[in-house]
Length: 294
Image (cartoon, rainbow, N blue to C red; front, side, top):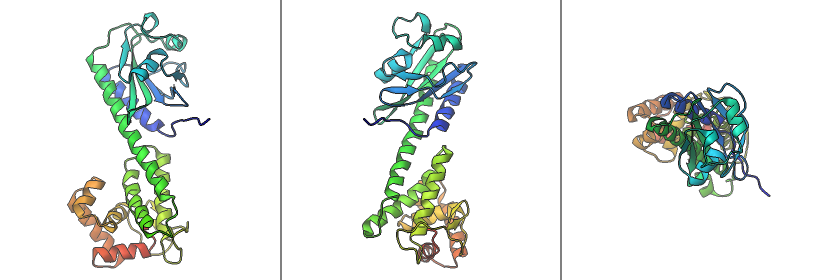
């Protein structure tokens, strides 16, 4: 039997909880992602006085978070211990932390619950619209981060496919290379970001002269793998060239990288100067020969 679990994401969960606590006014926030089938593990806490909730495995349907996951909508109780609308498997951990008013918001990505975020008070007070809205916004922020990680993992899987015998597949890998570089700048998880940039370096090195299309040699750019000889380009210069190589206009490249078109032009001119060329096409060819692009 295959056991499903979330990998990474701890930095994104913590960022969402800090946002929830800051914008809601609630002193305690905690939560985590899916862990196994029908379970969500509490992996991050902020404002907690004890470790009672840390590592708690919440089952789908059980307790406040489990009910929110089943309903796929926020749910709150004024007095957790006295509530008749939730089950009470986790009362001991909640009591140990001294919590009463608690809300839970499911994190739903592509119609699938991927985690649960909680906010809480240490007194029985009815929670108003402000904390609920803040929790929902924090959940949406985490949903976007998880979508980003999903896309990064998809592109990594494309990049790892052998493409030497299929020119069309190699073009797909080149497109994935550009997307991977753009995503790496937006990924909060440092481990995943490092893996993305390392994959970019392997792709670029694989196409360098004398390496063939399946090599796994070194290379050099500022902040990432590239060749041991030849020009050194700044990471953003390589990002721009990766999209130019795919045929993107300056405007399209700027939109994809979150830059202004004038900034893209500046990076392109700088890369051309370092490569000793005078056109976009020459820059792409020179970068591929130098092992900076696949």
